[in-house]
Length: 188
Image (cartoon, rainbow, N blue to C red; front, side, top):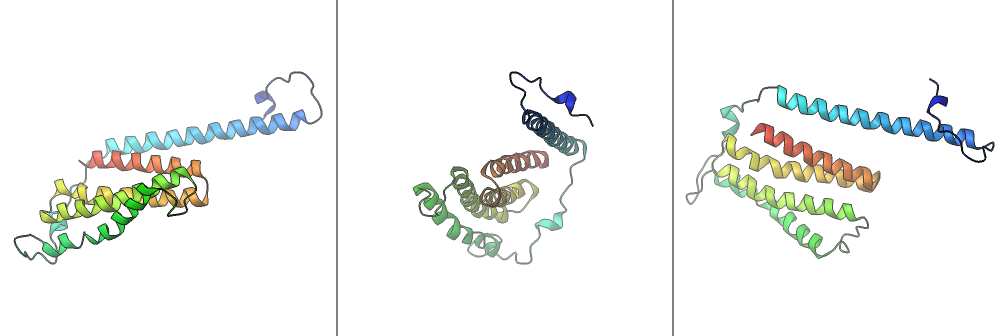
């Protein structure tokens, strides 16, 4: 592999340190180009796979629960009520996120956005899960799963933001949310 062809022409002084620096710069540019091409290829392959494959039908047994009792006219009462403890964590967290990041000790801007999405997903999961369990069917299943996927992907992105890099975590958050929306649209 000859990297000398990728080197930019030197201008001005061509001191003894210009060669290795220019070589390293050319190598980094080539590596970044490869990463972008690989990422674009993976996105295109995933999109093709989503469009080309047939939709999986859910089995009707998916919507049959062990406890299907009605209480006070609410079908699947205990299944509906078990969704609401998510509000106990979601609402206070959402309020703290809206008050400012000082309560959490969050120093990064996108980390605070990730926490907001996490708690908003928990609140939405409480209502979406209750809505699904009132009358379980394929059309309502998305309202049970979508908020949970948003919460889990934002939590993973927060981990990446805190432990790796803010920019990498933000790209993780955006790509996961995009994947969630595309896969949800394909399921519908």
